[in-house]
Each structure stands twice: as C-alpha cells, then as structure tokens.
Image (tube, rainbow, N blue to C red; front, side, top):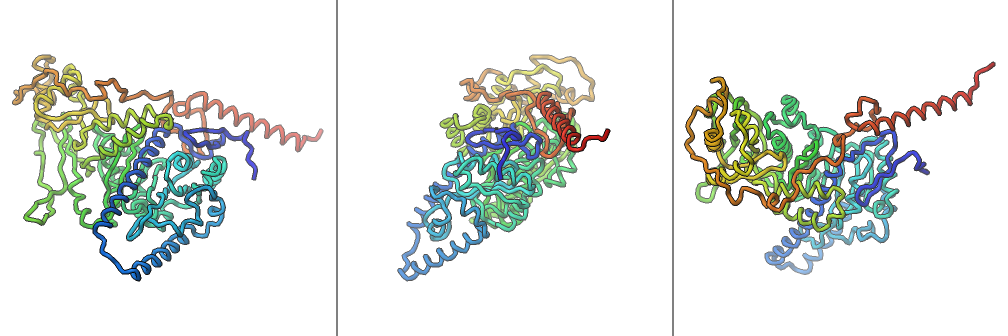
Length: 579
C-alpha cells in the first residue's frame, strides 16, 4: 500500500522521523520532547544499572553456590531450554509477520532466542530488556527508544485506536530496518495486554492524555522484579487541588492548594502506584520524579517482597496545612519499634498538631496521604546527569533536561514539600529578604536548606515552622511593617517575641554549586504557546488559538477550506446542472 507523502509532514526528533497527517488524526505533542529526552536518559541508566546488578548477582552465586553433579547440571540445562522455548512461544503468540521482519544483522534475532539465556535462577546471560509503550499513538517514543538506546531489546507499541496503529506501523517502516527489527505495533487495550502478560516487561512506559490511574493496576503486574515503570500524569488541575474529590476518587489521596501543590502532585502519584503495587505483594523504589511543563513524570523500580511491603506505612504521611499562615506539618501513618532482633510495626503517633495553629491560631486543612519518603535516588540522578552531559548532541532538549537534573541533584532528598519565601512575606505583609539572606539565617541556625526543581522561589528545609517564623520576626524587627488588623494571621505571628535570634550574616553554603557556577536552572519556554496540544481527532477551530497559536490554526482552517472548495468543484463537474 503506497503512501502519498504530500498529505503528511515529516517530523524529526532525535534519530527518529515520523509522518504526521495534516488533519490531527493521531496525537503528537511537540512539547513532550523534554519528557521523551529525560525518559531516554533514564532508560540508558537503567540498562547500565541492570547489567551491574546482574554481574554482582552472578559473582555472589559463584561464591555461595554448592557443587552439583554433572547429571543434575545437565537436567537443569534441559529444563531451562524447554522453559525458555515455552516462554518464546508465549511471547511471539503466532506473530509470524514480526519474526519475518526482524533483520538478520540484529544480534537478538528470533532464531537465536532459544540459545539466549534470560535473567533468573541458574542462568548466565542477560537478555536485552523488553519495553512496553502502552499508549503509543504515532509511535515516536517507541522509535526513539529503539534507535537511540543502546542495548535495548524488543519495543512493543500498543494503542486501541486503529488509525493510530496504522500510523505507528507506517512510521516503523519509514524508519528503516532497525525500527522494523525492534519495534512491533499492536491494536490492543493496554490494560488487557498488561494483565495477560504478567512480569514480562523490563520497562513499562505509561504516558496517557490525562490521568494514568486506570492503567496502574495492570502496569504494576506486568513489570518484572527490579523492572522500571515510567508514568506521566497530565491532569494537574485535579492533582493540584482544583477538584479534590476527583483526585481522591482517582488517586486515593486528597490534595491541598499550597504553594507546594506541584510537588504534592508527584507524591500523590507515587503513593497511588505504591498502593496498587501492595495489592500484589510488591513495592516501589523511586529513582527520579520530575514536575516539568504541564505534567508530572515519575520513574520507579518495582520489586516483590511481602516483608519489605510492610514498610509502606512508614513512607506515607498525611499533611496538615494551616488556613491562615500556610504552615504545614506531616503526620506519618506508621512507625516501627525495634526490640532485640525483631521489629514491630505500629500506628504512627498523633496528632502532630493541635486543633488550632500554634503560630497564628487558625484551623488546619488535612490532605493526603502522600509519599513522604525520598522521591529521587541521588546516585541515579548524578549518573543520569553525567551521561546527558557526555552526549549532549543526542538530546534535542538538552538545555532543559540538564537544567532540571542539575536542580534535582541539589535538592535535599529527605525533606518533603517546601516553603515559599514570598508566601511567608505575604502573610506578614513585609518586604522580602533575598533568598541568600534567608538561606544564610537558616544555615546559621543549624539547619539545612536547598532549592527545589518544582518552583524557582521554593525552599526545602528541615527547620521546623517555629524556627522559620522566628527568623521572619527578626527580619521584620529590622524592616518594620505597617500596623494590620488584629485578627490577621501576620499580626498574631508578629505579636510573639522570637525565641531564636536570627543571624543574617552571609553563610558560605547560602548559594548552591549551580548558582555559584552560574549554571542555568530554570529556563523560559522555547517558544510561545508552549503547552499541551489538542487531543487527536478534535476539529481545530479558531477557539484553539491560545493553545496552538494563530499561524497553526489559520493554516489548518485554510487547508480545510481549500479541500471543501475542491470537493464542491469536483461534485459540480461530475454532476452538471441541466440547462
């Protein structure tokens, strides 16, 4: 079947090229280049980490493995080969076309599969990782994985829309032999496919248009032990408190509308994934969690362990946020008590706050539960950042992702949520100290402080709220404010004398390493109208100018008018009116 290229625009991103129809038939979002680039960087790090873990596991086995007789060894080899052939038959599922398309040049051809030995008990060679892109649309992400990530195995691209699958298969052929040998596209419901392929994929990528909540239960079952789940959520209005009841119904957590709402969105998503994993005696270990552009994106490894799963309540907390001064406090769900060699799991102590705020006397809103354990693995972040810098020419969005990773590498890993300096000053109606002065006061008081990748004005600190307000009281003494009504939160806070005398002398660590080296950390959008684009299949009209820009909208409308005019002319020529 031939394709008329005049109806398509060729879009190149990284090493992949796709054909996009002018009528918005299949969803493609240019702004997700940041998402795709950072996913490729994490996938490269995961493949290297997986190899290291496999080598360590083998060396450990060779030291501790008991000697077996030649007969037992030969029996085990026969069993392995037969089991492996069963697995291969199951995975191929009669897809003869895919097998035929695989290139002879590729090291992981189907004919060699029975000789390959997968990761597991008594096995030696590590098989290339299988990747599932659950919602592929045009297939751009799957094609980039196949063409740009070294050491990757088969990439399975799914979609339940027939037009999208046709577009994906067309793009696979358009990208040549490497894409044809590594990427396969199927028309299927992602949830059904993942449920019917439990613990089969080393990497599962979920990037839906909206909430991923309906896919999480099947996704956590389809990842192998130690595998990677990559998940995006774009319904930020829901996750950030715009519709709290909707968020609770989708994610099982109630959001709060604080300045830290975007980080809370990340932690709500992590808590939701953990909840789904726990139902199958599994748990998650986050390696990277990013809030960028108009979405949140998390990368977590999934393991199976009934005993380790018991630690989940220690990683979750409720959040109390004062309605007056925006002070927040965390209430852990569980705690442990160690006695001799045993550990008991008990409910968390509470409440952590009284009925009224100690600082301003107002009530608290309660949100959560959220993931309160670390959301990044700093070793992974450092490794990913160095890898990105070493091959910067291979990342179209290098500037943006390197800036985000640099900021994440300097975050305090064990401090959930953050303060907003401008918000503190708005409560007290005072002028704002510079970030360097405020950071210095916190450091001089004996506490840690850092920035956050979520908000340029956000500050993470392990200092309790009473210390923060004492620092602000000392600042206001040197920078007086106008008298305010007595019932205002700021008036109540300033009426108390500070217990801590703040020292505003500049501290050495008041600037991060990136700030000292003048490395860009928060970049502006590369162009106007940068954001989520129109869902595939929706007709583009003049009301979408704010989303797409006037040039794009007018171009599509003019194209449609020309087509309509040509269709009418053709109809008149085919059926002329009688005289």
